[in-house]
Image 1 (cartoon, one colour):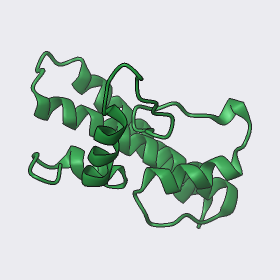
Image 2 (cartoon, helix red, strand yellow):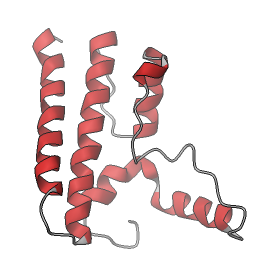
Image 3 (cartoon, rainbow, N blue to C red):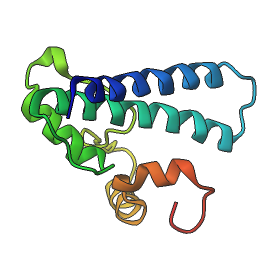
Length: 130
């Protein structure tokens, strides 16, 4: 893959961030609109991580699962200065001990709604799977 193809991932990332910023400043606060804005951020993050992996390794898996992408990113960019905090990371979740049954509720939710399909959850209207 040529240098331009690496850069195209970065440029698309920036375009999604720009569109997300414009959309987030709109006064429409419906859940559908918020999901569309969240998807802009989600996809921008995905493109950036793929860009970083491509730049380092020369190839990247054609997947959308953040946990797998960020695992590869973290193995390539291990320093604290490379950490990316984002709202789609559920790995540091800790239940509040005051909320009885919260851990079980969280686990049931994660098993049913599968964060590895977050892009699908944000892109389509909710149903029994989202």
